Image 1 (cartoon, rainbow, N blue to C red):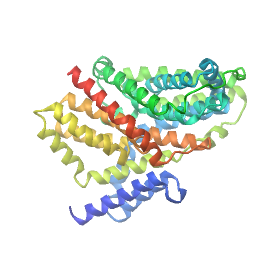
Image 2: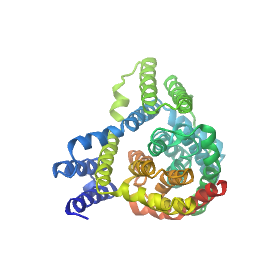
Image 3: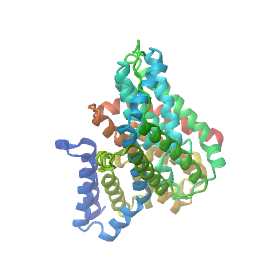
Image 4: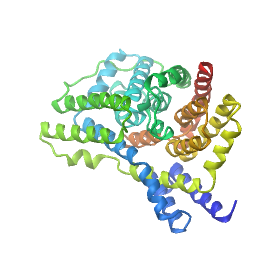
Length: 416
């Protein structure tokens, strides 16, 4: 390793540590952007390559903008409070039943709207449900965080990282389901079982079901229609092999504008509340990965994949372990980008590619920095006055993620 490579790794490590630890309570995006800027200023990454890296995330930025607008409009018009009261009523006083309802809702939300939507849209509603039901919110919030990744390979649209890893060339839906239906069931079931056991003491007992539920307002109904319409739109454009970012952004803008027009409120209110910092965070991560690529990381991974071409099962397991844990160091979107580039260079067999996708999607359940969805989830609960530190999340992730990953990969190998 030459000096330039060593400095690159040092800057990327420091930036990642800043994102994880948030020293002095500075926002995550500031550390990612500072690291990216340092790489350019020290001449370790040309400005043109940094701009190219930022441009790679264009579809992801648009996707996030649409989802965040949908979330803020729904929040402003009481959709989350209505959904929370509905969940508390259907739990019928049982905290375990409320936990199961939240988990099931997370499966549906992640499958049809993506794991980022579960973090941005569902998490505030779940916190409101816990508050109304007088239940401990943390087990329910952890359910949101973990199902956002565990269910993120049910469909191609369930996770933006799927698009990144396959480089925009997604398999047909039938082929996708043939490869990932059983592994998804395994990941979802094992994650639920272990999390339910881990949180058994905190979800034991009764909660309040006799809660007041105000009728959903006109704005709330319009926001709900926008969210459902967006889910249908994403399924359609995915089947047509169209990138999801622009349709999602348009759906979010149209919904926000339409709701504000119906209710005669200003569009500025939801726009101001959007957590815009997530966009420079993602851009900074893409730049960090571009710099790491220049140190030979992608070439090394591609060589490993080529060397193990004769034993795809072994290659899937070995490379998968690296990517699964690596996703927690650099976030799964950049990790998916690295893996996708290495796959293209190595011409890896389908079994290896599928294994890597499972690792990129499910591996991030280990830590709070593993996926963009988990970072969004953390920002969502902070807005509600809650917080989860790195080590607190790791204690849950270390128990739930490895068995779920083994189960999902085993299911994929069983299919052949």
